[in-house]
Length: 105
Length: 271
Image (tube, rainbow over all chains, first blue to last red; front, side, top):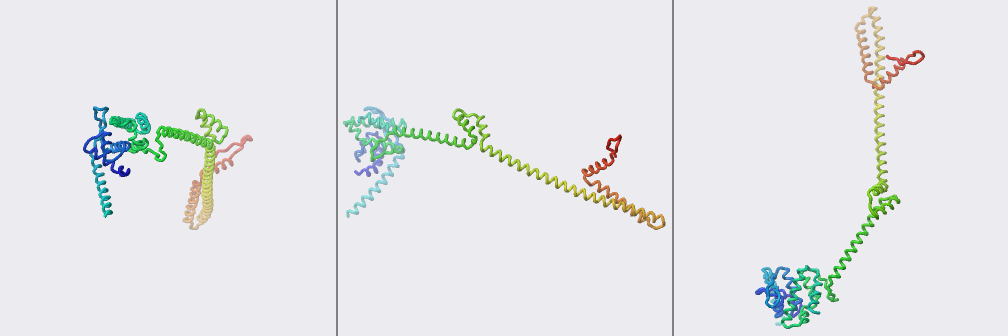
């Protein structure tokens, strides 16, 4: 996928991933990587930014496999932000799709 | 590069952030690498997944609204130690320059203030060691500004004195002139009334001679007598209105006229 496309939708994908279930960093990277091919160097700074902007809250949870893990939990503001991004993306995608379809005919 | 080197470099690059934040980031990244390795990936591969360290640092700093100043073309890694060192050098240089500038400015002010070269040299020496208020006071008294101030002050004093003296003189002259005019006028009146009185006495004499020879000049004689009294009154009033200085002068004049000689010596007479 184009790098600019990835950057545009990565925030939406991350917010959507955490919306239904709190996740820790590695788990979130795995989830996002299913959709877009991004490295950890892109995901972690984004998680930090979303946390600083209060779209995420973090908490530590004990793990049986090692040290406590830092989990990300979406806030109400984060949900609103996710809805806003989804609406923007849908509108954008619909318009582009319509344009492409129109051109094909 | 192993995990420790990676984390060490990352810590160094993020040194602009608070320690607690750096610790939080490093713990998370370390945990991620450990989990990736547990998943069967080698340490080197796990580190590669983070991509370029400079880009990673820039991304993290951007999340804190910190300008990473990442130079993508040169692929220059951020070195905050160098930035800090550079900043310290700049501040030290600025302080030094400010100090020199302040010193130069101070010297310039002193040079302007001190006109006496000898005093200025001694003042400079004292400034080099320790300022004393006494010398500064002396220097200030010899300063050009102080001298100019004194000249202006003296000039104004002289001008003011001249103005005062002129006003007083004019006032005195005016008073003196008024007194002269006043006294001359009343002396003139005394003369007029005196002549009138003498003329009245002469006329009264004629009237009395004619009255005693049988002429009916009783009424005219009484009128002449009244005129004489009026003239006498005029002389007295005019004399009372002349100034005391003139009276005193007249009195002295009359006393001198009355000096007598006793046993060959002049003795002032008393009226």
